[in-house]
Amino acid sequence: MLADQLLNDGRIRSREIAEAFREVPRHLFVPGAGPARAYADEAIGVKWAADGRPVSSSSQPSIMAIMLEQLRLRPGLHVLEIGTGTGYNAALLAHLVGRTGAVATVDIDEELAGTARQRLTAAGYSSVVVAAGDGAAGWPGEAPYDRIVVTASARDLAPAWTGQLGDGGRLLVPLSLRGIKHSVAFRQAGDHLASVSVVPCDFMPLTGELAAGDPVRPLGRLPGMSLSVEGHSEFDLATLRAALKQQGQPLPTGVTITPSYPYTGLGLWLALHDPGVGELTAIGPAAGLSPVPAIVTHIPGRASTTVLTSETSLAAIARPPGAEQATAFECCVRGYGPDGDRLAERLAAAVRAWDSAGRPAGSTLRIRAYPAGAGDHPRAAFTITMPHTRFLLDW
Ligand SMILES: C[S@@+](CC[C@H](N)C(=O)[O-])C[C@H]1O[C@@H](n2cnc3c(N)ncnc32)[C@H](O)[C@@H]1O
Image (cartoon, rainbow, N blue to C red):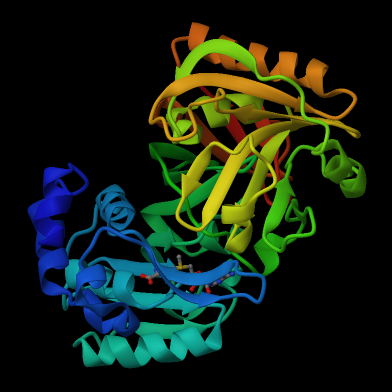
């Protein structure tokens, strides 16, 4: 049973959420997957773009459970979900807030919204309001909300979300800070939002208005290879593509990591300390045929590694030779291109600094979110300013 597995794994902590997973039939929302996959702890893709990028999926149940716990739901609450997808999470939300509560859900993809509406009705959740539109505008029709939950990653917070949140409400967003994603629950704290729970996660990005300035750039001849550097994106892709053919020796760091290192706090540490840090990703067919031997993280259909870029060169987190299948290994850094060795030294020093600082985890980060335009802000260890929001970050 999926609910028992999520309880055993510690993803579900409350009886109500276990019951929601037992009661809501996921197979009705992912009919193409078959019953075994529908009740496995797996994300299930339901729509893809021409280049193989997923457009929509039913998220992995373990992260859905974690996020439902972060939301602190109870009967009678009024909830808005941004990113309807299959409608399964909306059904879980509707189950948890009960007949006295209300759920509205918005998807930017009209076809997905239509299918989800039919499936929610078939599963007995016809009271859920399903709308098609850009969730950056929230859904004013049913506002204010006690909870707003976004189920695609966002680099910025839409002003409509804070505007439509009722007093004492909670906003839950898979927040991408320089490309590193954490599910962040925010509560209102006077003139800003303050994080109350931060959990590493991986989500496909929001499209629409909030995707403006998306730093992901295609790289290489294979569709699916891309480079994303939030801090500066004005590099010459042809030069960097050529640099990938000039691979330096692996530089050992003395720090042991696992393939999921970006979620241990190391990814966030590297991204916050150097604006040149980003991610090199291969998805779809490119993940299997990738010309980049440095790639570390590999989940089915997607391979990626952390890179430090300059105008002509890059350095990448890599496995040491012979550790291609290892589940824990010494973090190495490889340089590519004329400036690759210098960049590799810089990236290796940052990895060692994270280790020496006691390997701080992303979950211990404190995040405050202020409207970007609003006067002076308090001081913080790191500041990231996006068009709508200034994020103040302290470890
Ligand atoms: C990971 S899926 C959501 C999974 C969903 N909650 C479920 O239970 O199946 C992300 C969804 O966000 C939608 N999306 C992306 N950008 C959006 C936007 N700006 N506004 C609303 N929905 C958006 C996508 O179309 C996709 O269906």
